[in-house]
Image (cartoon, rainbow, N blue to C red; front, side, top):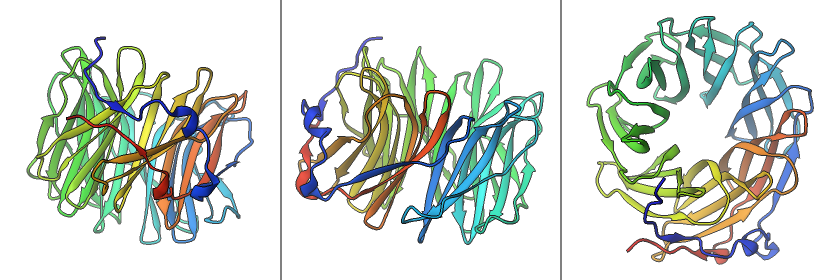
Length: 389
């Protein structure tokens, strides 16, 4: 693939970035949370008050992926985990959100013919688990996402129709009634990893879509009442772009994805106004080794990132912070883990003065759940990032 013309972001200082500076007050404490002889993948987390709630998929003794949840105190004590499903069918891509003392879930589950959408609800104390199969049509449904807003649950997923896949959305009441699903795209192209964010009376989407032999970034908007769907292709360069993420903050939408530069998978960031104007891509990383699974969270004038980056042997956890208020736009990036075994699927959430993380890490036999906590970065430790003209 031909490398796109890009500007330099985060120049050559990666040795320095791997060093934690005590003067910054920045610490990163990681803990292995599981030890059983079954692999655990795709972990999620949400911090609520003084508790942290977790979710992942875990292989069982019958070689079926099941749904597990856990929680602990925000100080790292009191870890409790529980298996939530046991039926002899694979469950994939679990997601959840805590809202009003309840936890809402979605995942994709095989019914021996196709992968269908399932949802569940559970009380915050772990009681009252109730799961419902929401679809039963032909076509595999994958990569579901959900968000709870104003007593409604909004969802998105991709549904395979032959050699292509389409974007579907759904909505239901938080009491489980009123389920309604709608196909939103029809183009004969492969669409992957849709993400969305409900903000005020709009829903903002992003996904990766195959266009002219390359995966491009598409965005869309939809009113919360289901009207006004509008999709736009945002990139066109001859490089593949995958795993986009987004978050809306005030009048801006912030994005991150991984993009192939001809040699390595790099990270690219972008943002635009919520009215769809002002699309801007400041730059892309240029360092050696592949980067994947980026995530972001916007908190005030800062954007926090986490991703996996290969160090020549194994995928490690890296984090970064971008300060949006500085006129020359500065960032700080750090390697957080080292050593043998791959780290996968990192997630983060900022809460107060702490940033909480979760990921899946190989232990030589299986993938286990690891969590970590770090402090906010010190403004005095920022490192310049060069931008496009």
